[in-house]
Image (cartoon, rainbow, N blue to C red; front, side, top):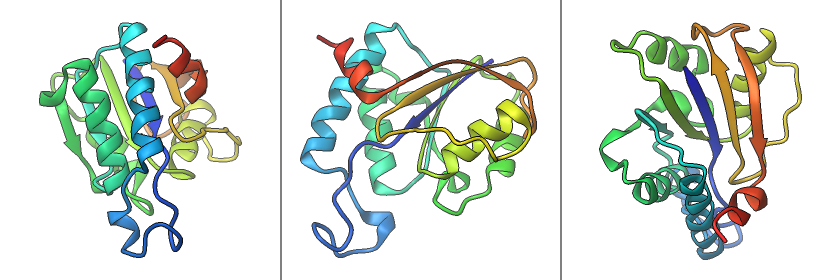
Length: 168
């Protein structure tokens, strides 16, 4: 299994550009434009996913929808409260590992610091490794048997600028 981790793109700044609930905070115009380019970079890498799971928060939902649209994968997009800020990553991994048939390529779209915590646990069994996932970064993990413990090997981690440069 290949597990891809995508951090949401640039959102409106809380308290400055957006006054509503954090869950409703959308991507900024700059974030949408950059994410569209990042998604074209993902297409240039010929990425495809059997399943895309996103936090239902507005900024992650928009990020996932932009990627799914660019890749022609709108039909495999789902939302999970386990990917929300404060969600339960162990339950997310249990849900993913319990799927039959098991998806070969999964994209998770979420928030920091939760995504780094998930990557750290899957790589070394605990959440102590610091991983820099900038907004719009994409990480690829290769996993033999998915579990919320050490089970993955890091294949690559691309910054948003690296991904966007592939679209040129």
